[in-house]
Length: 211
Image (cartoon, rainbow, N blue to C red):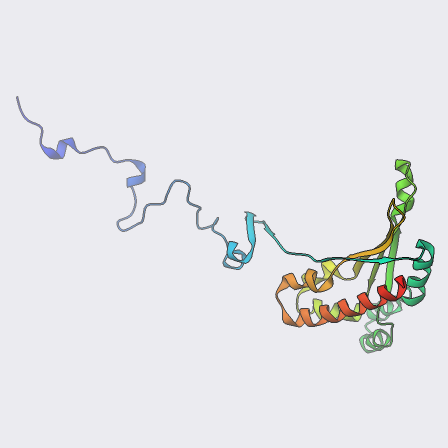
């Protein structure tokens, strides 16, 4: 009987062996080059990449509650006296390209203004509940621009949402997320400086309204 030579006993070549000489073997579950985590979205920076078009970042937010011994109506009246409604005439000036005049209008405006409000308490009537709760958008357009010029994503938190509410136990309080913590997620000191000042101004006026 003729003995088979060692060459004839070699295993068949698999498809994975059809690599160019010197090419490295990729693990079965290893991501392709297109799937690899972008450098700017590494897990070390708190990001989780869901897909090539979506990522999630975990951040820490400081939630502030400022309580008042006054009635809901009294605190509401005090806040709306201290913080005027926003005069949006500057938007018309911007539409017509009158940039300098718009800037002058904003520079002479109040430190903080109420952009808008929503009556969440009235909405709860559909659930048969009698609650008092008003959500305010409070901020300053010029202040916002000082942050969004560096990180346009900061526009997500400008103006600041502030809730004036009365609990079922009749406790009246303001609640909001501290600007220094929400804007701090962007890691830009130029934004942080403005956010800290906004934080001070907001806390000050809310304490006055609650007292």
